[in-house]
Image (cartoon, rainbow, N blue to C red; front, top):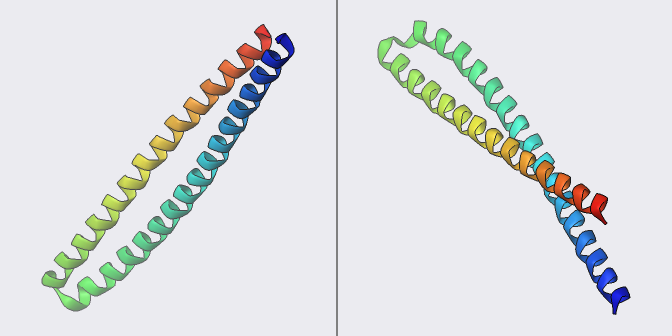
Length: 109
């Protein structure tokens, strides 16, 4: 009976570790995707700013207002990416805390 209980606890522990590991991989993938998206947005914004400066000279103030609107949209997208990155960091901290609890259980066992 004790052997079965020990095996069950070990299986539960393995499952928790696998879940934590899967969460960590998912967080790393999400973080990488967010960083790539952030870089792409920054590059697009830089390109659009350069285009806007050139076009403002060509098109006048009415068109410049439309370009500023596009810049505002890009800034909003970048803010969303920053928010998502903060969420990833929070989730990473949760995974770290989970791992510490697992290690503490291991130390007790």
